[in-house]
Amino acid sequence: MLVLTPAAVTVVNALTTGNGMSGDAGLRIALPDEGPPEGLTVQVVPGPAAEEQVLGANGVNVFLDQHAAAFLDDKILDAEVDEEGAAQLTIGPQTPENGLRVPPQ
Image 1: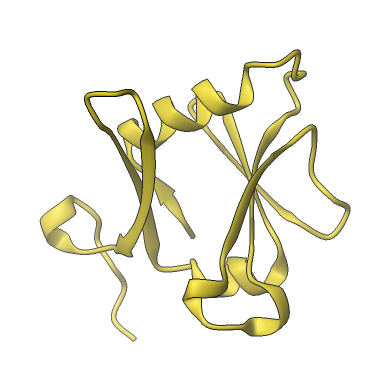
Image 2 (image 1 turned 90 degrees about the vertical axis):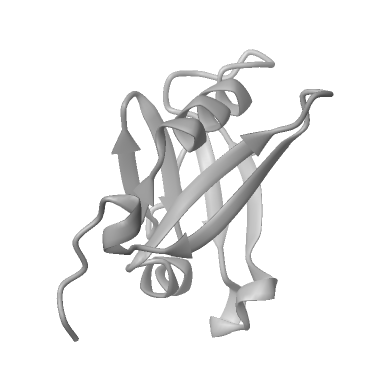
């Protein structure tokens, strides 16, 4: 299952609580037609679609379509904010180095 770092939780919270969004708002991550990882799309939406996996982490919602959920199953979502306040989300592997135990495959 996709894991969010504390930095990612902070960024997702900032993105999903503005512009009159409800408490059901979240960050949708989609991978259309099982495309390449570069094909991931990210958008803020008012709520999940019926077929999406919903991840709730520390008060934020992340919605994954079925292809993204499969691709991101063993990944970690992190974020960085630069000096100008621009956020960048990054996806990486879950490893013992980042404090996550990954089951053997």
